[in-house]
Length: 129
Image (cartoon, rainbow, N blue to C red; front, side, top):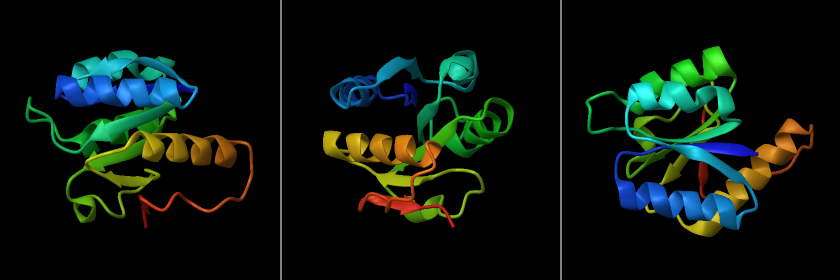
């Protein structure tokens, strides 16, 4: 799958990109702002989206556009998973710090779901209500 990373902390974004590659998927790049995210959206199947970005735009605003306009599967990243629980259209939330096996498990889950398989969600993924 093609994965985009919406994260304004460059070290975290690079680590996530490594995790995506480790899991056998392709990174289409990372975005640190709303405009950057929308530019990458047409290339992405999945987006890991930080809830709060430095430019003041919140992840849910970006996620809404990614989901509604581009059909991207969105997983939020945050230190406070309860803050976005129930956000319509997202797959769920991964709590920071995110480990490479978390990323791999979530990508396996998304891949299986898009192929119609009914598998349990990864343990560390808080599902959207």
